[in-house]
Structure formats: structure tokens, C-alpha cells
Image 1 (tube, rainbow, N blue to C red):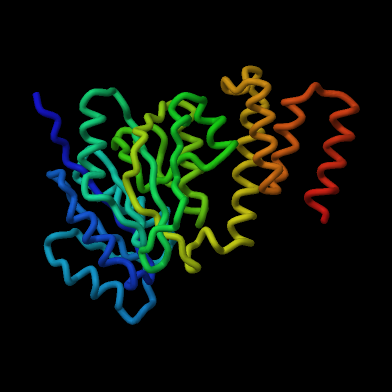
Image 2 (spheres, rainbow, N blue to C red):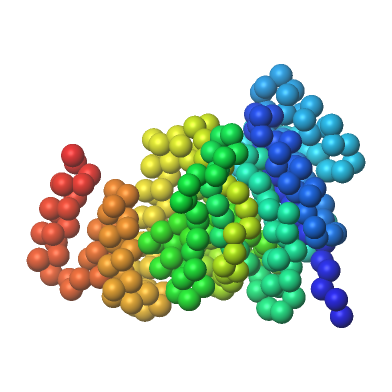
Length: 291
């Protein structure tokens, strides 16, 4: 039997008239069919500029408006409204490559995956490739996903396809997290679901000054909270969720580099406990977090 599922592509947008048409066009240009495109206007305040861009596409998309609540709330509207069995996410400022969906569906047709994701390239605000910059993560499929999530940024949500039953089991995106809702979701999924990597570039991810991830004070606070919670979850488990001692050290070094307090938890577990480690932790804390 042929594998030809309906794919639901969600595009959350807030004051995004500058890039939205490009994103929608890239979704409509998918070589795979059948698809549906859900554009969720998250309470834009740009004199209806975003609304006008979306409505120009008529019945080629499904358009929804809501009060502003953040990316997570917009994604959750799409999940509730989707008609397909597979959920795909496209930020309003990013672009799908034309065969992104087809390649992932082909991959799924020969696997039992519930979450599949891939690599990406980076572009600037004008759509120009950023030389030498890609999100290629060829090792992620071979290592513990908790390790990956605590030692790097392996998953770009816009490269994914997620089966609807994942949301039934794991829950939706956390609407209390404006900038880390995706990694909170990946951590929750990693507790019980395997991530399957297709090591091919699938999207163009845009880097620009107006992104939520560039709002540093908010982003840093949210990351501190998220990583501290996950680090505690891991170190409280005797098996460390399958992460080796070296893996714990890798995670600790990554978190230390990004100045997350949770680094101390991981380093303490990665080293032998005792007075030495306590002294080291105090020293690192003073050096990294107090200065």
C-alpha cells in the first residue's frame, strides 16, 4: 500500500508581514501532496499588514486569528485544528526547501518513527546564505537524545514531522515559555520517544535581529530554568537516562559555556562526589556567574 498521509503545515506569525509571504510560498511549493497550510495570526499589531498578506492567499491556506499568546499558543491552535496525521512547523521567517516534505514522507514510509527531523542551512534577513553556517547534526541519531539536548542544539523544529499521537501522549507546547517552548517539548518527548534523524538539509533558517531568541535577558532566564529542571531530572535517576560519565561531563561543559547554573549539577555527577568537587563547584560559580 502507498504511504500518502495528509501533512499539516503550521505557520505561527506575529507582526510578520515582512517575511510571511515567502514562508507561505515555500510551503505551497512543496512537491509533496496532500498538504494543508494553517497560518495562525497570534494577535499581530501591525495595522492588519500580516492579516492582509495571509488573506491574499484565499482558500489555498487555512487562516486563524487569536489574541497574542506567544508561539506555543499559536502552535497549539494549529495542533487542535489540523486535519492531518502528521504535524509540520514552519516559522514565518523561515523557508522550506521544495522537497522537504517529500523526503521526510519517503523516510517515514520505511520506518516506524513518530518524530523525524533533519539538517538546515542559515540565511540572513535578506535571504542570503550565511557562508559556512549550517545546522548539520549527523551524530544526533546515534547518541542519547538527552545527551544531545544537554550538550548542543540538535533539533530545529521547522525540520520536523511529528505524528499527532505524540501530542496525545506528551501534551502540547508549554504556553508559559515564550522562547524555549520547543526545547521543553523535545525534552518531554525524549523521555519516551525516539528521534529519527534524516541527515539532509531540509529548510533555510533565517537569522535576524527581531527574533525572540535574540531577546537575551528573557532567553537566558528561560534557558536557566529549563536546563536546571532537566539536569535535576537526569541526575536524580541512578542510570542518568543512559548518559555515560563522559556524557555528563560533556553536558556540564556545554552548560558552563553558556553560563547555566545547571552546569554545576552535571559536573558534580560527571566527577566523583566529595570535598574536591564541592570546592570546584564553588570556584566555577564565582568565576562564571558572579563576574
